[in-house]
Length: 250
Image 1 (tube, helix red, strand yellow):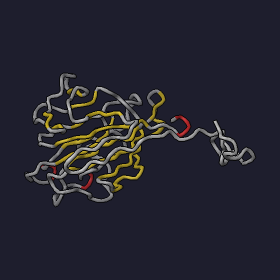
Image 2: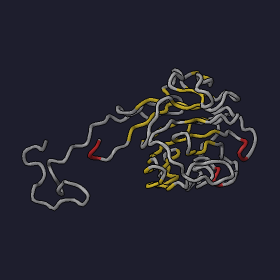
Image 3: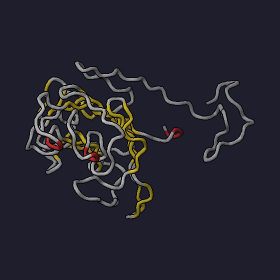
Image 4: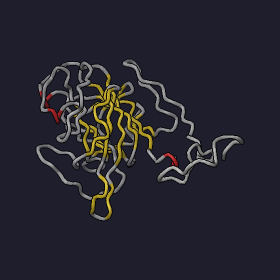
């Protein structure tokens, strides 16, 4: 509801909307309280309207991808850690277009090289991977670098912190859309790695995989978040998402 004297009612209608320029009747933005940023020592707090996927206490909202059994990763001191051989885990909750926040930490001791150092992955909808890898002074093929859209697009820059330091991914995800089996809109992703833009509304080719190009195959508009067991002791904490809607739907 417009306040008296707020906005105008004699201005042009904005294209693709029902609202005038400076329309006082247009819905006001929702009020959201910002979260408290994380530090190296302590996990932060999400915004007031975020949904926590892992708050550091337990894995009750997660399951294995193989058979839906209880997730077998280790939880300690506010983080979860890959237990090699227990398999990938995914959220029981499914979601689509979103703002996603994930924090991860590579092992303190550097072992291996290229793809053999601190390998894991953040899979949006269980299909589209943002690579997790220790690429601090560690070269690999560019589209397998830390924060790459794996097998498709390298990050714009290498923004890795040193092993043993907490790192962040802030991801804006737009899921693909289908009509029946036909793709009508591809997936898009924007990624900030440690606060630096490494993908800017990048259009995905299709689901990501190793050494192949996969076409889009029709799937629901929502899916789980999956984390990869690649046999390395990678840690994760403070994982949350916010559903993204158009302004007038929010």
